[in-house]
Image (cartoon, helix red, strand yellow):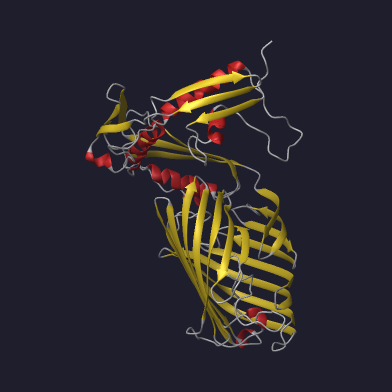
Length: 548
């Protein structure tokens, strides 16, 4: 019987850090997986000689796919250990590219670049995508990469035959959900007779997916017709639109937390939504309820009714609050507009001598406008975000105080190759002093990272913060993508916070620091360490979610 091989190692041109030829990547090429450290009951894989031979061949093929056509691999088996040695040798380069001018800027290949099979494949996909977006769905593409081993070079030729432009044909719809067909048709971005554009198909799919009630969405396009039309058949199958979710999390601002939520995305039909949930952390708990009607009287006008109850211990006060927010929202002129009524009844136990404890009723009218041009909400790499919020408390609607509160936000993100630059600024104003729970606070994971959560600004003798009536809170961050979903960051944060209304020339609190980013489908996992310039020491932050 063949001896069992218990250890497999790699030598030669093996990268020490995470990259194409790192040990972990070579193990993936060989389909080798080791159990995670906490699964101590699982054994490490073992190998046969045949496994080592196949792994050796796979690594050689993998090297060639990355342009190392002269790569040499060999293996040695001694007792129960195998070693595969890799010698990459020279990587082949692109000698020439024959392509029409129209497509030169579409492909990410240049003469003199190292040749990788995956990059060549992606270039073909990019050209086809471009043609489909320009109405040439029936265009043909003949692309070949000629590898010359004697001169050790690669010559690439692309030949595109456009044929005639295509048009959308008949659009048919199959839907089994309790949703008015007119609401669905309004989300279809194309019409019969219009020039074909695959981007419109993608936008339609996203619109229907955002309904949140379908388990199956199919947009079938028949490009095999004899004429220049492309008929489209849309099939929608209702899924489980009622869901209950649970979640746990942790960050250095709010510590450990728990969330439970029930959501019905087609409550009483026609995409009305009902949400009921609770949030619990170390400082207290919150219950919330939301009813949303996205087609209130006419398309595009959305009605929301939010009712919240919270019992929470904040840094400078304890609060028991009942809040109701009734609002109407509509998008026009490229902006999202929301107007509504806000009722807040709070029972406050203040830890600051200057601010009284007691019951407060503050009612207000509010307006918010948002312009969001980020390329992704969870993990943006380019774009900008602007918002303005104004809250007008008035005794005319039984508020105990007349006041005006505003908050303006600006975020800008720009990526240059692997470097992402992010800027954000928040400007808050209160026209008069109000109970402590209405103040602005700064410091923490989502604010100035040189300070602990809400600990920036004036503090009393027990380190309880006063917050402020005027605030400018800004951050500048540079992030470099080290490998795939991993990035390192450096940042500078600057904040002005004063107890005087409408004053923006007070002292600024500045800090700098460094961070680590790991991007997940629900946003980046962030670890930051901030150093205040005005004080000694440092503050460590950890959390998940997008700051910019």
